[in-house]
Image 1 (cartoon, one colour):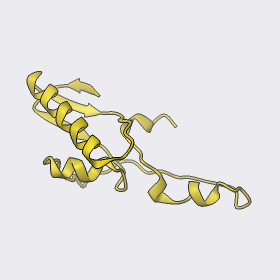
Image 2 (image 1 turned 135 degrees about the horizontal axis):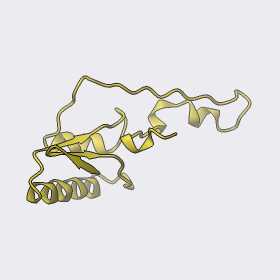
Image 3 (image 1 turned 90 degrees about the horizontal axis):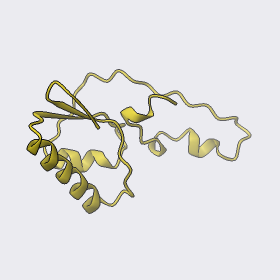
Image 4 (image 1 turned 60 degrees about the vertical axis):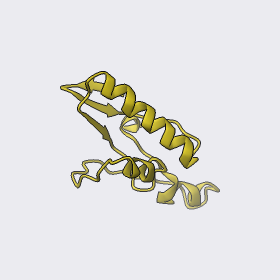
Length: 99
């Protein structure tokens, strides 16, 4: 994450996807940032990201101001095409803007 003007913006998170571990990770982050005086935390997540459900349970709210789009291409003959072109396989965060 990075901070500025009292806001922490989570750029990336690596989790296995188990909801209890995700909840513990997010709760720990919230606790740490509150101790540091952060007033707001921003998570920019793809709508299929496994962090989303836990974030909502912890009080994060959806903001309808998305400014990012992902465009993917795979050759129709590629054995990876079904995986690459399936949106639920993409878990994008702000840290992925460089790809």
